[in-house]
Amino acid sequence: MSELEAEKTLDFIRTRIQEDQQSGKNDGKVCTRFPPEPNGYLHLGHAKSICLNFGIAQEFGGLCNLRLDDTNPVAEKTEYAEAIQDDLRWLGFDWEDRFFHASDYFDQLHSWAVQLIKAGKAFVCDLSFEEMKAHRGNLIEPGKNSPFRERMVEENLELFEQMRLGEFPDGTKTLRAKIDMSSPNLNLRDPVIYRIIHQEHPKTGDKWKIYPSYDFAHGQSDSLEGITHSLCTLEFEHHRPLYDWLCQNLGIHHPQQIEFARLNLNYTVMSKRKMLRLVEEGRVNGWDDPRMPTLQGMRRRGYTSKSIRDFCEKVGVAKRENVIEVELLEHCLRHDLNLCSPRRLGVLDPLKVTISNYPEDKSETVDAVNNPEDPDAGTRPVPFSKQLYVDRNDFMEDPPKKYFRMSPGREVRLKYAYYVTCTEVVKDEEGNITELICEYDPESRGGGTADGRRVKGTIQWVDASTAQPCEVRLYDRLFNKPDPEKVEDGGDFTDNLNPDSLEIIHHALVEPSVTEISIGQAFQLERVGYFCLDSDKAEDGKKVLNRTVAMRDSWAKINK
Image (cartoon, rainbow, N blue to C red; front, side):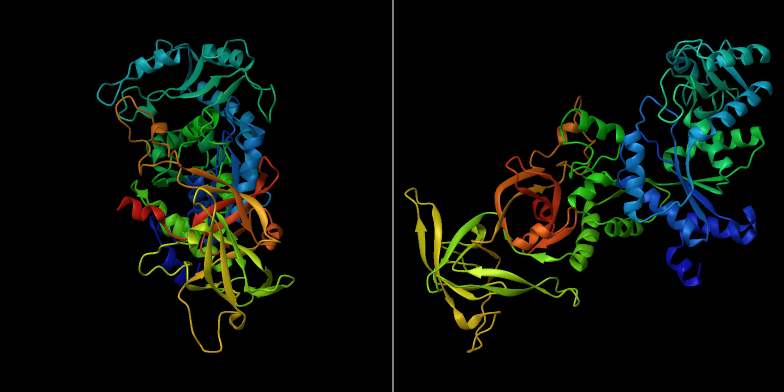
């Protein structure tokens, strides 16, 4: 890593790693890992850990492993494991051939458990989980020893073998480390390191009837893989003494655990358990619902991997918990989309326009800029003819002062095309506006006139004969409060769900080239917002556009 890079990226984790390298610790090697449990889909909080672990390995000339913590077969699915790998690749990270599972080490972990039993540092306990909780004590009172704590080594070995063979029902026995029931750290009060689970494992099948706890598998898996720096979120800070105790008492390679603050985002929940509830209760349409903070949902909504990486870099790493404003995420997204997304024309609420002085049998194309931020993006032809559609929001029959869009007698520019003036408003029997009759200036093509006049209003439009109908889904924030978990007595975080988080527009129209854009690729409907083509289709077969983000933050004005 160059001095310039170090200066730009130095934080307390990188400082520690730099010091370790300079002192020759671990022979100067750096090896990190990303160890998700395959019991749900990755979310934005995981992205921070992914970027940190893979980023540090890259910066310091090291390696980063991907390891699935598959120690609980009850909650794990192959579907989740495959999605994790897919999400990491989409974010732009590669673990090469270093893809591991905690289950790869089950035999060794079992041997180490036996080693602890033989050393008198682990015992088989018959207490139920409720009884263990009662024995555990609290932050003020010490715990009480299990009545089974002093079992002889031979008995513990025999019982543990019977547990392995599946001779006891779930929950009837556990293997616990023998540490200190009076420790001020509750994690050291004889923690469970193995429990009985009669459940087929996605990878090992029915070989095992006992499974290691996360605390027992995590540090030892790190050790087996030669991890040098085990980066964890702050909730594992109090687990670090147990991590250290196990490595020391097993006499194995001892990685350094370093904790950092997790990513907390307002208007969002970052708990897989709560996300699972939203899915199972039908409050969202699956893990990949575009309102969800899962990487699958964000991808479907049109987020770019670069915007998420940029966001994680701006958030940085801290030692204290804090809440990041979602506006920063949306800023990173808009910045990236502005630079990379093609522009297209579309109207969400079509209002018919007939240009009275345009020839009946004439049609043409006008050149539209694909992206003004990218000089190499070029232009595209957009059809234009006598009948068009504009957005109903761009017309006002009796406008206020400083209204620069379309109104009777006011000249506006149809973007990339001509100047037009509304000469007549057509209404139905109920007084609803159904059509605008306009005249155009044939000399104003492309936005200029011979007399040099300019207009202040420019509006988007589509050609009536070639416009493509589509369904548009306007996604907004899933929760209507900055802290969704702050509820009244007896309330629930779901009470803060935003009832307007999804609005469906069934009869939008877009220019023909929109249908050629690939699924998931974000583009800008000019003056409307950023969208992407969804993998889903509407009930009537029309293509679906998901709004990725509005052109500007509409919530800022609401919150004022």
